[in-house]
Amino acid sequence: MPVAATDGYWNHNTAYHPWLLKLARRDGHALDVGCGDCLLAQRLVTVCRTVTALDPDSAALTRARERVGAETRISLQNCSFDEFEPGDSRFDLITFVASLHHMDLRTTLQRAGDLLAPGGTIAVVGLSANTSVSDWLISALSLPAVRLGSRWHREQPDIGVVVADPRESLSEIRRVAGDVLPGVTIRRALYYRYLMRWTLSD
Image 1 (cartoon, rainbow, N blue to C red):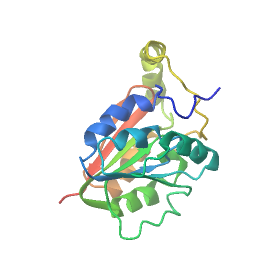
Image 2: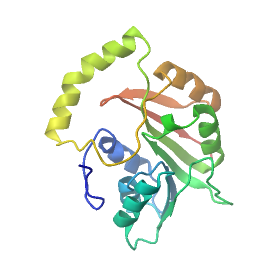
Image 3: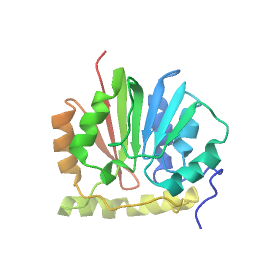
Image 4: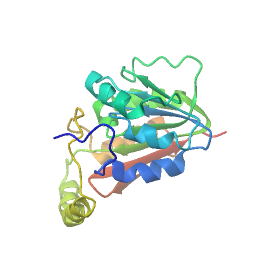
């Protein structure tokens, strides 16, 4: 059963919400791409002035509206990132949590870079495909810690959102991201995730 839309919960994605909150600029404007049920947006708005949350899945947005309630500083939009029309808006933080692999990597990162305000940051909690022996070995070695963390935090894996398998390996993601966002940092993280960060110079 999916978790109730108004509840907090822990899973392999929300484990990195604290990292994202540390990157948020106080009184800044955030854009959450692929917001799902809006738990991250709900947390970001405790720091940011406004949060714009996008998701093309109507069912996810229905649950997001239940969670957000009367919070006017969160703007929900039922659209894909490609369809999003920001007008003159630019953002201090753009987040992708388990959503970037649903999109074209190069064009999505290019557009995200174009939507940043000076000094703004793109932050990705992403999934990559295992395509090499080393990828599979690292995944296997991390399994005991992953299981321990999931049990300790009482993981809620099913939150009723659309999922997809990643296509690109981490090496491919590093190559494309490095082309589009010079100086980007990408590191492997626990729970079969990687963390990407890039900041636009002032």
